[in-house]
Length: 155
Image (spheres, rainbow, N blue to C red):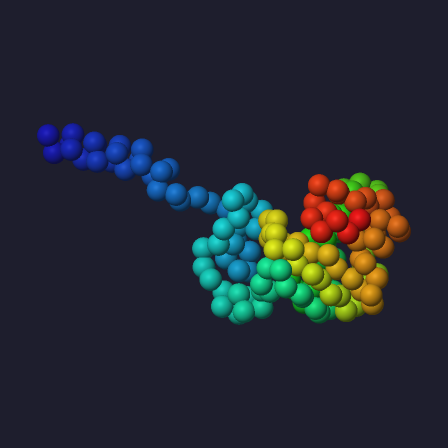
């Protein structure tokens, strides 16, 4: 009887373990699953939360990194350019679009945030020296307007 009870308890625990919400996966510096859906965090990082701009606000800073043609980092905050659809980096046209965008690393950028967020990125319409970055990318690379996501009808 003692062994049956122990066996039953062990089997019960094994069957319920997946329902407990435990999972694996790498975490970024902020303790978040950056590539998984749904995106979520395990710990709060007070220094990053104070730096994260509020939705529907203006973010102004320096382009610190270019991930690809339609994603840049402004002062380390990832911004997905609204309504811009660039080829992926694994293609020749995508690598070219990234090279075009990389010329703006170190430049001052102003982004009007739409309030949307995709993966680990805020979404916004951005400009450098008064020039619309999305329009520049469409005119100087193979990036196109993604009308479905042109929420402010800019293009």
